[in-house]
Length: 149
Image 1 (cartoon, rainbow, N blue to C red):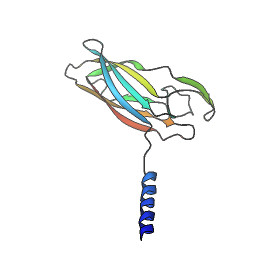
Image 2 (cartoon, helix red, strand yellow):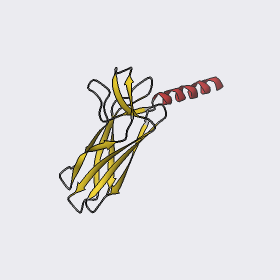
Image 3 (cartoon, rainbow, N blue to C red):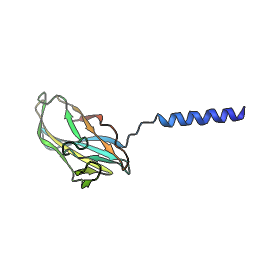
Image 4 (cartoon, rainbow, N blue to C red):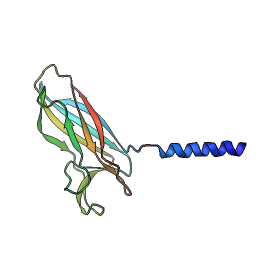
């Protein structure tokens, strides 16, 4: 009976380990007020050791680039230029056989906006990204973002 209980516990532990979802990238947001109507939306990715996140500019037929979308553009705010990113690591990737820029440990992305509705309190959107380590890539993932003005 004791062996059956131990076997049961080992089986339960192994099944639960297969069901875990990898989340090597987590996101946080912040807002920097530049003047009465202009703000900088800051999205920061915290990247687990051994993993990397790709730039917004990736050649065609490469990995999925990081992409930011903001809900309600033109309905209380407008974007000022494109989303800026830090300088990452640019390498000749042997898997994709192309020059690619990626980030390790962390990455900061900034989007300047002009608020046209003084009553606007929050801007929402999402980021789509792909994370890889040295042996695998995870499918593209979308994470909701919220910026409190």
